[in-house]
Amino acid sequence: MTTASMNALLAEAAEAGTAVGAFNVIHLESAEAIATGAEAAGRPVIMQISENCVRYHGGLAPIARATQAIAASATVPVAVHLDHATDVGLVTEAIELGFDSVMFDGAHLAYDVNCQTTAEVVRSAHNRGIAVEAELGEIGGKDGAHAPGVRTDPAEAVEFAALTGVDALAVAVGSSHAMRERTSRLDLDLIVRLAGVVPVPLVLHGSSGVADAEIRRGIAAGMRKINVSTHLNAVFTAAVRETLVEHPDLVDSRKYLAPAREAFAAEVARLLALFAGETDAPTAREPDAPAAGEAAAPADGERTASRTQESEA
Image (cartoon, rainbow, N blue to C red; front, side):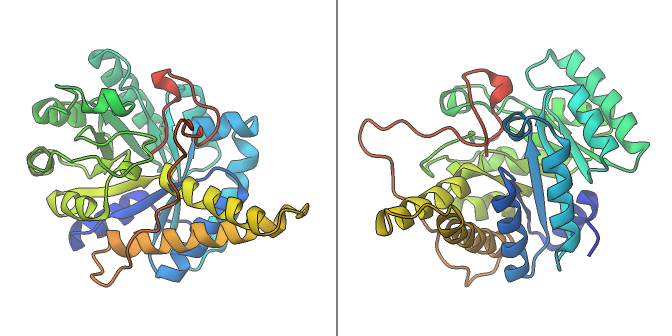
């Protein structure tokens, strides 16, 4: 199957009152697991490559071409998306590589500069038939996203969409990147207000920190694209640890990466069923919490405290 249009997937979700799952590619195993999980669920999916992933692999083209090949061979619709790019040059490269959609993240810029730069990205992408997601209202780390006032203003969002021509908008409504506990509370009233006035689909970043029931409520309120990364990385890593504890003499990495890939794929399938509103979707697989004093491991490549490094959901 050929890769899918993000716009088409989001339009179908809006009509059905559901949401599309968007999961971050970290390496080849995660890309394969996303496709396998989507096929098992019989649902479309969005594979995302972030700036951090590009940095980890030393460039965009190799991991992009591998991901696009996996997407093209899948039996369900798969869109390949550039996630959280703060570098316009990287966005341009993704456009040239034929990504189905790109995200330019100018939330760290002054509002006027964000509008102008995003509009330029939109013109370039639309000339190639590529959709653009943008962000308004900084979706930062755990403290920042829960600080007073860190929310997207509906009037500003309407103006931003009109000035830039974006196809989807990531909004700050209470979630936070790279959380290891699913304790975020969404501002459901704000989501309803945004969905009622913003003319493009709304995107929820930082969904790893949002529990299943809260995600369902967010989708019912109007979210149409749900980004997940850290939670799936934790599932993958927990499976690797489990295998190595059981078989400490393993040296063939395929022997512990394969079960981790299977666990990742199973959780992708479960999440896609959840986002599609299937009432019999199983409950979440919760990886072991870090031991006391253990720092949460970096996700999606090397992270720093800088806002521009945050691309996990």
